[in-house]
Length: 104
Image 1 (cartoon, rainbow, N blue to C red):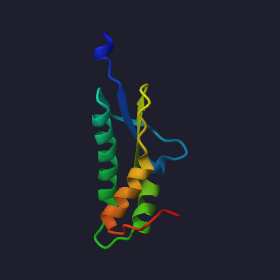
Image 2 (cartoon, rainbow, N blue to C red):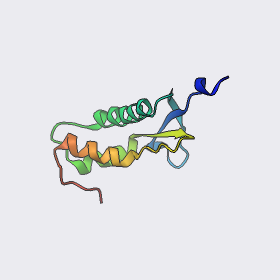
Image 3 (tube, rainbow, N blue to C red):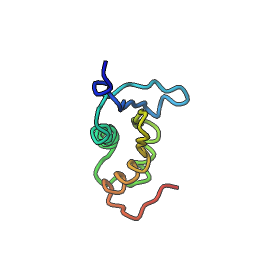
């Protein structure tokens, strides 16, 4: 197998409800860091959209996510790191319209 054919980025996720013994599920294997990041973002978006209801506040959406949300990670040997909770909190602000909200 040549190095060019080896996949470099594995995206896996677990559900917060499975803590302290999470069961990681592989979501995809990618050659491109951009594709891996899009996959991880999609996992968060899918999870948040399942909890979000119109009029829901950021605090309640965060609480739902922290209890039951899917948490993605990108495993690789290239130094790529996906900041899951930075993305989660940004999306919570966007979905709820609470642009000044910060998690406490």
